[in-house]
Image 1 (cartoon, rainbow, N blue to C red):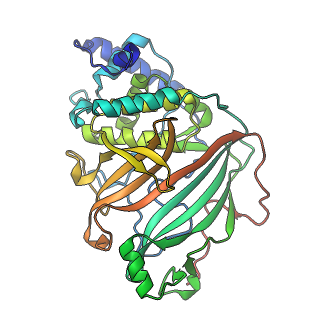
Image 2 (cartoon, rainbow, N blue to C red):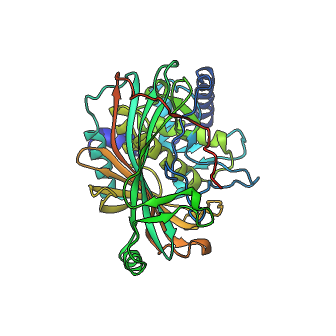
Image 3 (cartoon, rainbow, N blue to C red):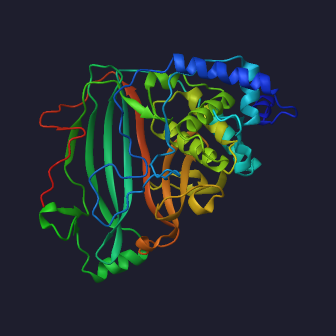
Length: 421
């Protein structure tokens, strides 16, 4: 690790004065308010839920955590506009202390309280991934195209299958263009050796009813289904980053210094949920980095900043070398949630779970995220402890000036098909 990395991750011996901290924070907030972008069409990434098709009734859709007032929210959301560059010294000191005071002057949050910093071996891997993320890929175009595969564990008969979907999406960067999504059921298969044995005892069926009470609803098949085209209204695409939605242009303006990026994330999360604990903030930043790395049209410099931020994020753990759901070799990191993490208020999310971020440290490329259920709740008693519950694998992302395929007969985004029963 070189001197720059040491500077970016060390904590200062003497914290800034209260006057300096308050002045810098107010300046940051004033600039953020001044540059907040107008509301745009919200792109509908589906974190922790499969993309298509709809689930059978027994399948769990992971709900968001609930705050003390009972309203639901996702920690993966950030909704502020462009973040200007402040004076480097003040911003870096604020970030390195990792202490932020919300609007309530009697309460400060220090995310260092969320847990220990990542071990040095993991920090080295993440810093290496940051260095190797610098590539000469284009930063803009008419469409941001993403190709992903999602999987979700589903109970059928007396065993479980992993149902897979694929989606290729054209996200427009011009207000007059439409988003286009090509969605396809990619097939299902027994999820484990135990499930395969039960499947064989059931006669090795090649399809399963979507809803046993409604035969007209159709079936899940072992093989791929037809491709469905969905179009959105003309609008610039936006992407969930922390607590709201940003356009690609706004994402390009995010700080590429890891300290400033952390300051931006902490403030946006606290503005959406001012009573968040240190553990919730750390988890919220982790989730925001998943969105930033895996779903947003980021730049090489911003990817590098995200990896460097993770390298100093309290509570991050190393799971070592793994194989992602597509069979690709990578390294996994995680942050435990729910009752596994001290200080996190909980809703019924199916029991303690572990979210894994899998990346290739040799190239810096993000590969997949996945959720594993550690201690299943009663209504998920059919899920083995530690089983893979859902995932999203990045197959390809790119900018292009090409137009999407024809959309004749396409469904309109946001309009639900009428249920057959």
